[in-house]
Amino acid sequence: MKFIADTHAHSLMSGHAYSTIREMAAAAKAKGLTAMALTEHAPEMPGTCGLYYFQNLDVIPRDMDGVRMLFGAEVNIMTPDGSIDLPENVCRELDIVVASIHAPCYGLEHSKEENTQAYVEVMKKSYINIIGHPDDGRFPVDYETIVKAAKETGTLLELNNSSLRPASFRKGTHENLKKMLEYCKQYEVPVTTGSDAHVDVDAGNFCYVQEILQACDFPEELIVTTDWEKLKPYLNCYKNVI
Image (cartoon, rainbow, N blue to C red; front, side):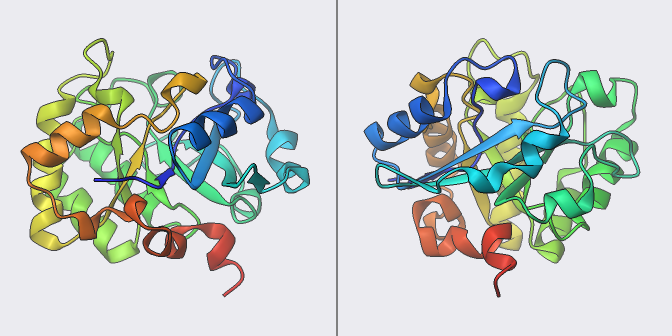
């Protein structure tokens, strides 16, 4: 299976990542990608860039050596009611928005029902394109409910390569993703692939994602990052011009 896009990665602007925008673009090209999204951590993540960074992204070229660059944010889901840490008007101007739960911003004390509600509520925001790493067992969820909400709202669920690393700090990721993928197959819900790279050598790296897709016999037609025309309708930069 050939992937043409990586919809979740970070440059050094995220604070705890280590490569420049140009280095990430070059790495994407070397991997044979035609599209690369840099989704920097939004302001409530410790050490990341501030609001003005996201308001000024239109100055950056969207083509770098033949790679279509997408610039956006990985916003933090802050509470079970689906609040996030970037204003709606800013999110709508970004090429792509991933929404994720991170312990420093959301905490670890919420119940399965609250975590599920948080994802469902954030998916109702039309400018949220992707739910990032919904695999983390530290934040248990009802996967059938999540998958149904993704179908209803047209939100992509992410297969996060970093989550599947043997050294990952996220819990139960393989089992959780297999469960999610079975529901995605059942309800015909598309997924996306994100490296979650924090350094250029990991850009476009989907080695662990490949393994789990094969193990689940997941259909390629439901993976939007294998074809630009499948991915394009889910991006804010194209929704906003329609």
